[in-house]
Image (cartoon, rainbow, N blue to C red):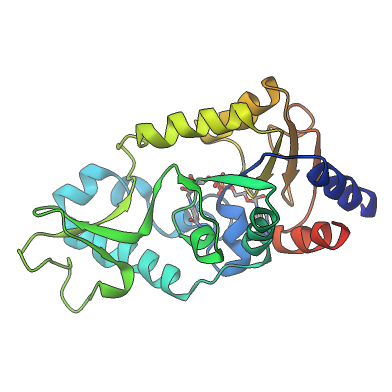
Length: 244
Ligand code: NAD
């Protein structure tokens, strides 16, 4: 195992253009559970009842009371962990250029990374459905639900609900940076949600090395990724950085 930390550090040293691809797993150590699997958000809430755009538009109060207030609460409490901070260290030394994330928690930006492509938007900012005014989570008051703008419009999170499109710009930029990187570090994603799971394939086909960091193997392991370092994101990033 120690060999793999050294190998990853060497691959980082030899790279000039690293892209990070992250999923829910990188934020587990920050107290945000993944959606799928044991302890996941979808064990508590049925996504069809609470997480589709139709569910939100037909009954915003219900979705705000249950799913959105829980997400807001989780995001308010969460701080970046050593996994996020490690990716910022790699940006500071000029190696990492972009992060593509499926996460909606804003923790990469909070850690300091400056180029973060969000596939699924985020729960950090909110837009009024009527006048399009934007505010951040700390300005949302939940004394009356759904929260409303001064103009009386209802606020929605800037996340992508099921049934909504991934922002086209996020998609084309992700494809572009994936095809140009020389190393992709894939952290905490089960690599089953398209199109994010396709980015390592684009990178691999363009000649990049792929390192995975995950406690579990994924469909990429042994096929697309050159190697997987099994373990939690924070612990693994700490050990790699020590070898740099
Ligand atoms: P996923 O839930 O499908 O998979 C999570 C992965 O993280 C698994 O492979 C698991 O083995 C791994 N993991 C668990 N603990 C880990 C740790 N400590 N360190 C590293 N890896 C760990 O997540 P996904 O692939 O991102 O897809 C789920 C979708 O749910 C995403 O599209 C995202 O929008 C959304 N989501 C976001 C958040 C968030 O913003 N923090 C949280 C939950 C879900």
